[in-house]
Image 1 (cartoon, one colour):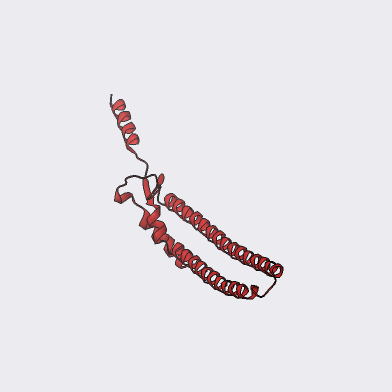
Image 2 (cartoon, rainbow, N blue to C red):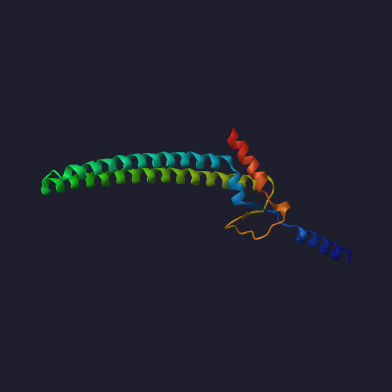
Length: 168
């Protein structure tokens, strides 16, 4: 009888052992991660510079187009059409060049953000392993945690590690 009670007790202890589970609020984590803030800032500066370049080129092209309109009145219709076609081609070429630069900036930014997300995932995995977590769930917008006890929120712990590593 004692062996049966002891066996039931041990089964109860083993059954009561729970997995260690925590969650990370992805939105808060990424908003507070200084490297992400710096990457966004860097690409905002590039996008702003491209916007200024686009505005400058556009203004210069508009001035050139207005000058052409005045000049075209003194040209023959055939010559004016020919010049207008060349002006249009140059405008399209400049537009394509600017669009390519914009796409290049977007691709670079996306590549850096993808790399950053990979780094964050690796850090979360490492944190989970070194702290004995069975699961670390994703919270925040689009996450799988609809509710979590604040004590299980690992966001600040992981954010602190990420920012410390980034400072180095």
